[in-house]
Image (cartoon, rainbow, N blue to C red; front, side):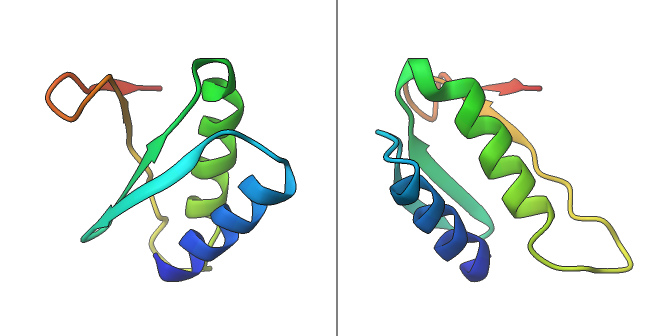
Length: 76
C-alpha cells in the first residue's frame, strides 16, 4: 500500500488535481475528492492500486463515496 500511496500522490500532483489523500488506515486510503474529479480520480486510484504488484492472487479494490465515513456508500 505504501508504494501505491506514493505513486498515487505523484500522479495527483503531476495532473494538478484538487484531490487530496488525507488518511491511511490499515489497508485503506481516504481521499478528499472534488465532485468534478470523482470519475477521473476513481479510475486513477483503482488502476494504480490494483496494478501496484504482480501477485498470484489479484488485488481487488473496493471504493465508497460519501460526505463522511458514516454516509459512505459503495461505488462501482
